[in-house]
Length: 123
Image (cartoon, rainbow, N blue to C red; front, side, top):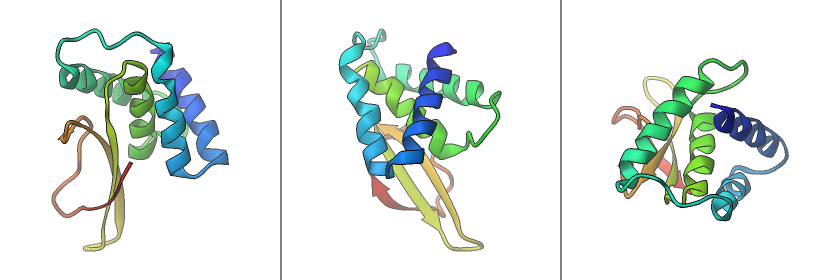
């Protein structure tokens, strides 16, 4: 839990001073500081971490919606040398909405939203 809260605080600071692509790069730079993941299946470990991030950030004040969760998870996965992509998508009907999630090996780690969302960028 402490690692997640620390990653969230670092992420919030990074978002306040840099564009999203730079923040994703900074999150991935954490890679060399920790040993590889502990699981034989990186997707299982990624989903476990995604669940932990969602549960932990739900307890914190501030904006902990999909983009914050995704960026924190990217950081944690990078520290464990588990490759992941940030996906940002939008929809225009019935009203405009945006959503972000994380994928590993093309499979969602965090909920990708419904089929009405169209991908606009993958980082």
